[in-house]
Amino acid sequence: MADDSQKTFYLETFGCQMNAHDSEKVVGTLVSEGYRQVPTVEEAGLVLYNTCSIRDKAEQKVFNRLSDYKKFYKQGKRFGVLGCVAQQEGEKIFERAPHVSMVCGSASYRDLPQMLIQIEAGKQRVTGLDDRETDECFETEFTARTNPHRGYITIIEGCDKFCAYCVVPFTRGKERSRTSESVLAEARQMADLGYTEIQLLGQNVNSYKDPDCGSSGKKRTFAELLAAVGVVPGIRRVRFTTSHPRDFGRDIIDAIDAVPTLCDHVHLPVQSGSDRVLNAMQRLYTREQYLERISWMKAARRPISITSDVIVGFPGETEEDFAQTLALLDEVGYDAVFTFKYSPRPNTPSLALEDAIPDQEKSRRLEVLMARQREIQITRYKKYIGETLEVMVEGRNEARKQWIGRTSHNKTLNFSAPETSALQPGSYVNVRATQSFPNSLLGELVV
Ligand code: 5AD
Ligand code: SF4
Image (cartoon, rainbow, N blue to C red; front, side, top):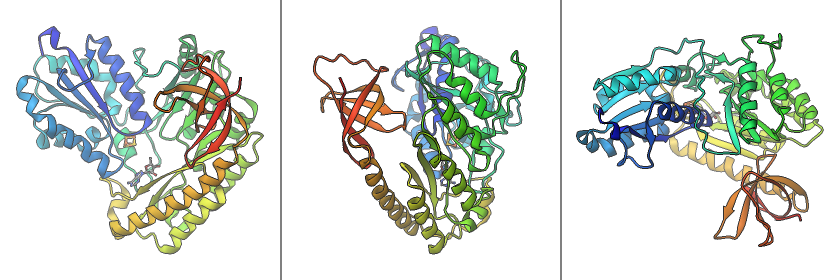
């Protein structure tokens, strides 16, 4: 890796939005260290995988990739594993894939420049795995954002919740918040660069705790931070993810009511509709408490779109428990639900419980759940027909001669427009919805 012409890298990202945004920061860091990003493994000197270990399937992907490209090691390519699998498996990765030179968890990304120097110097095994107890966040001025109109800002890293099934506290370390001053400075900087939509990110944004008063002399709560980002001049839309029902306060709905730029969408993962299963999952709320939060949203001034995550087949989930989850879908009326089959993960408390529900039964429950949710969405999406909605233009589908738009509710609204209307991605236009599908709307530009 000594030859400068070889300072190229390829990065593939798996997993959640946190990982996608971490990758933007990793790319920025590498570029600032003199590396050039290339679009294929073949062209790269350094091949990096930013990995996910939320379910076993996600974890297997990286090992498949590593074995596919192993042959390139002899040609001098170097391989690095970043992110959640790196943190979870640690040095075991070197045994399983001896052609890997670097293993680095997300809590150690601050050390990447120095780790790169070691790899360039020919060191065989470089690790960044010991920072899960850190109080520091990965703050960098070199974020290489992939979209010029909407971008992520991390406000809190790690997680202290320890839900029984979840690997995140073990892979991303303990919870630590950035100062609200630093988040706001980044939001203002993005607005100056022309960004109009910001998505605040964290494993659990609701447990945000401003560590410092800063120049404002005031520690902000999450709702106050949200509202403050919403009034940054130039910002038209603010989203946030992910919320945890236990920490989700009414003040968030008050902020959405008070600040029009805050999007009318909340992703509030429920995981199960059964108190028995919620308790076994150590989710720290009951069905009733969850529904109370939903009632706050339903009482908001603007109709709020609600989405969720559900796990089926958690150890001990009975038909009756599952029936309660189905009933909860009807009661809430979600606009989207992300559904998962329970997957036992290393280190997690539920690993000690027998994973007794056969995969076939998990698949059956998943299908039943998805079919029920599809019916709910068909009904919910139909209600928009005839309404005029503001969308951010995201792009164009040439084959269909349609523009792609996204509503404040986070729904896809594809639309037609007169040939003469030269629309630009990133602009905001009004569209009248004319047709609905289970996952999207179709409409016409209002001119
Ligand atoms: N098995 C299945 N699904 C899981 N999730 C998290 N951990 C697991 C697991 N071990 C799901 C949860 C979470 C989403 C991001 O992934 O629903 O909200
Ligand atoms: Fe996957 Fe969770 Fe890590 Fe995101 S934080 S990459 S979902 S394991």
